Length: 152
Image (tube, rainbow, N blue to C red; front, side):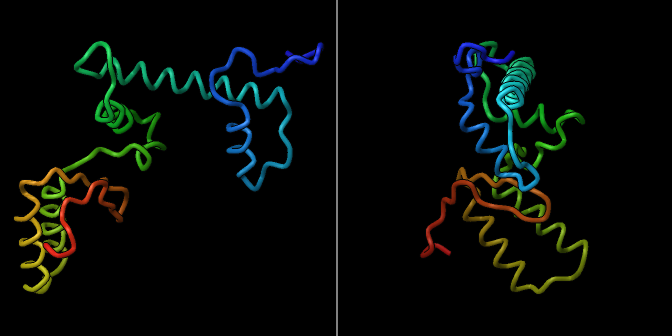
């Protein structure tokens, strides 16, 4: 596999090897990376992406395209892909997330009525919105906030 005549060893791969090398070097345990190792990691990454896309395509309603929800379903349904669940979570509507949080708070401890009224007011305002929340562990982040600060 070595390039004996000075040609680049990255032929035959689609991903940019410089970017893969930069990601590999970001790990503090990595001191140096040989050209052969870089080439093999790049090929393995490409094959993994192709496999993930093919699994999502099988899961898709459309036979010609893959959408985010297809990838999220594959990742969340496969035990082999558990390590990607924080990166590709299922998306839920903000209203559903707020309801889950209200139910969780009421079951774990009695929260103040002020907090419940604020959450219910926000839930009512978010009913018609298309805001999407991704849940990862105990923290959450709003992907597309639909309320302005003056509405809150």
